[in-house]
Image 1 (spheres, rainbow, N blue to C red):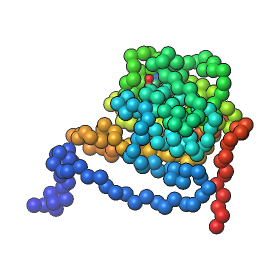
Image 2: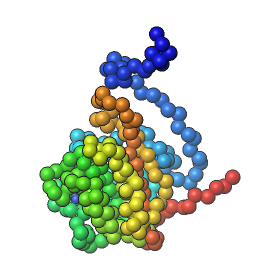
Image 3: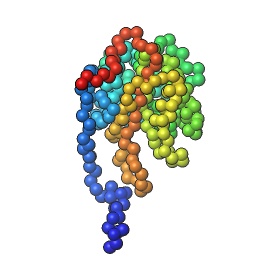
Image 4: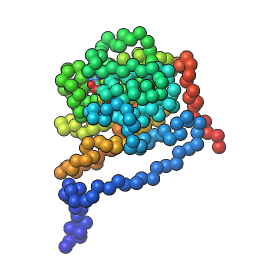
Length: 260
Ligand SMILES: C[S@@+](CC[C@H](N)C(=O)[O-])C[C@H]1O[C@@H](n2cnc3c(N)ncnc32)[C@H](O)[C@@H]1O
């Protein structure tokens, strides 16, 4: 056997069919002590329990524990979820006693409408979990973000969506967007996290805090075996933006201050 042969790796496609599935345990960095009301909420969201919110069988359902932790941290008095899907955010708000308005294209509300939302109130916090372009298709409607034919078309409508959210936020309010990059069959790797940041800044929003990398426990792709070789993406990203100004009451956040 040559050196080359002895270094050859087993074909991972066949190996994955033979090997038993294993869950690696990764050691996470320690969390600095601080005044957060939700000390376990860090830039790494690794909890596999989705919580009993929404409907796990709804395509793209996101689990509610991250939403719950964000709401406990930011303590808003009103919440909007303009792409509610199965209503995960609304269920969390119900549990926490926060008034929440939940809408979706499927309930007749186009969150990307060029005329904005025309709502009678603004909101302290908006939870947004849009389609990751066409990674999953949500409806037949041409207005569905997942039906955009090109990335340019998606970005145009996504930009309008983010502007609409920025407009619907109270001064000092927060917009949390959960988004993931993915490998598109014809366009290759689509950097949707980058586009989200770019469009949010263009809409006049600022980054509020660290991004939160959410480990994708339970993704259907994790249960598949592929013939091709690639670096699997095992996370999506929750980005939190802030509108200038300050909330009239209830905002309890303090800037991080190093004490020793
Ligand atoms: C990723 S899913 C949200 C899942 C939800 N977070 C849950 O836990 O069930 C994205 C949602 O965006 C909705 N959507 C797509 N385009 C829309 C539009 N233009 N206006 C409003 N909702 C839209 C889809 O119908 C779908 O329910």
